[in-house]
Image (cartoon, rainbow, N blue to C red; front, side):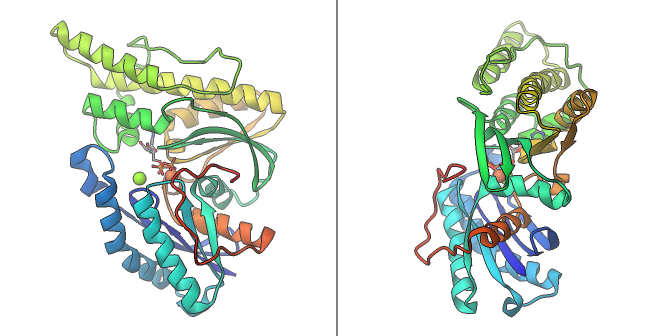
Length: 336
Ligand code: ATP
Ligand code: MG
Ligand code: FE
């Protein structure tokens, strides 16, 4: 069973061929970062146009690298939300054309569910029940599930996503774009205890998160330091900010794993690439005989292999193809 996956929800144009649900034959990711860098963020209109340009060549390359043709495909899986509507529509149109022309099922995939499946590609032996933190540019969701496809959201951010906080803080610090990897790198040369920053909601009894106050604290620190005519030590600021985020995420995950009585904890989404988060969480979980899993770095951020994988398992579970009237759902929630 060969699934072609298509992903275009943000600024990566990606296509992949996956055999079964876990064997990645190709995973072509064309990132548009160079076109968005000078704006310090993803510009939706530019992203849509680039997806139009890149979609066909990226699909052709995915098929070529996998050594298959359209006729060999068993299904086509596409992200239909959440994400930027213009980009989503480009992927959905491409997927519909392929499904129609080759008479194969069109499977609609939730992007966030895709991020979760990246873990099962990197760790094929992994089995629920698990606690999973999906932490990306647009989401910070703490999930518990006993079965794939049936997710209980036990906590989420009440304002900014963690990845969004990384990106915004990197922007005000002029640390580079995209922000997460830039801060991760800078932080390695800094002192995480140099600057005292808040750990929002760390002692709150819920599993919810909040990052906008932390972002404001960083902004105030920068303004106050400048006003005093002092230099900002970017490495120390990056390390201190990152430590604050990681402390909060770690505390809530540890409590959730304990309350739910699970031995396996997963990270998914772009921020799962963060080295400090991985290290600190691994250490804390190990002390309790629990295990941490995260996808290999290349598939933490947006890619089509995770979409093909999620599509394959959805199709196996309910044999439900989407109609040709499938539309983009920019605000799609997990479980909808
Ligand atoms: P969503 O998946 O919620 O729709 P998205 O697709 O834009 O949002 P992803 O592609 O999953 O998000 O991840 C991108 C985010 O991950 C960005 O916010 C980026 O800064 C962050 N990120 C990537 N690498 C790292 C890292 N090493 N440390 C921290 N953050 C990182
Ligand atoms: Mg991106
Ligand atoms: Fe994503």
